[in-house]
Length: 106
Image 1 (cartoon, helix red, strand yellow):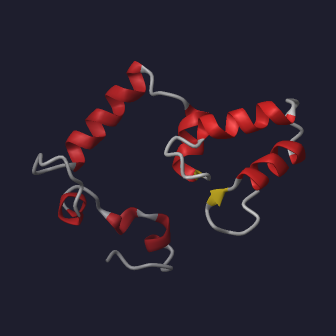
Image 2 (cartoon, helix red, strand yellow):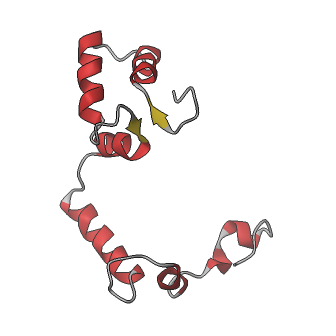
């Protein structure tokens, strides 16, 4: 889908993807959809823009879960996740790659 590897979809790539995935809408609607998904107006759809459109807004339960995780990770409460916040709550020793020896805990 991302033919040039830019991690963004141009209008041409988006049109091609719609054809490849047999999205049954006319070309004018494809262009309209592209403009709607391109939230920042830069002429491309980046991963976050596409993900937001596909996933939609968080429902109440998912939002509560995200808020709880955020509160646990943001240990100093400054609204920014820093490495020191994550190091304080995440133990990498149980990660499958660490257990298998592919990676170290640091």
